[in-house]
Image 1 (cartoon, rainbow, N blue to C red):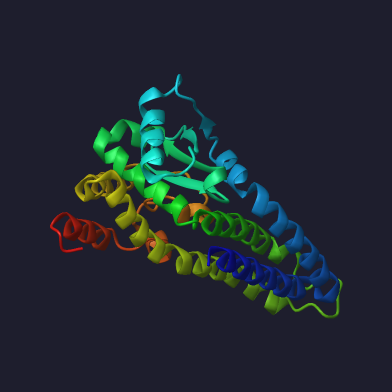
Image 2: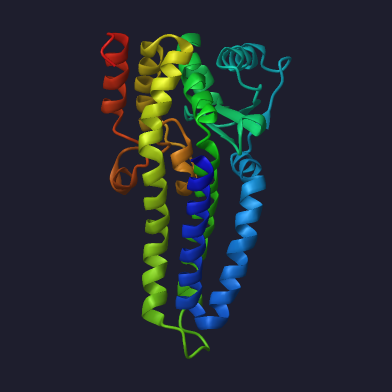
Length: 277
């Protein structure tokens, strides 16, 4: 199923790029954008995890550099029966974490310095169990590729106003402006379709893996407040990868949240703790 989702996502993004190219410069740019989409799909499949980790200046750590955090991830991975993922720390004071990679054999988990300082050991175990569940469910490839492709499309759409309607009788300035506005929205809608249900599943799987639903529930409460106090300087196209929305819930960003409501996530975990979930 995850391979099908990945293929459909790449096809959707390719079509969006082709339409954008046609709107910006007619047939000539349409074929150029198609070629760019093919290359981008191949590149993101193999290197999307490295792109995202580099985007946040994540630093890989070993057992000697971060023994408690590294051993926690190793113990959870062994409990889940999966290969040991690479472990990264992001130099950011905003509390958050994500997983990336194309499969469990090439996975990585990353946590910010802020989350390592904020959470207790049991709460951090709940967060890492959530992220490893994403790896086990094999949905990190889809989310990572969605983030990278959406970031690329958003960047191209921002340049649309500089190229729309130039030197090509097939081009349409109105269509170019429309694509400049709607391409990022379309990319975000694709992310939203992927993200919301998978977060509930990762919460449930993470609660079972760490053995304590309330550890994850308490962590989510703290993270929600922490991000409100210290929003992350994140690329909006990658927001779906994090365990909590890296932006403050205020303003326009709340309308484009890629995560389920925090109250619902916590309520489901509390039901699990009471034996009703």
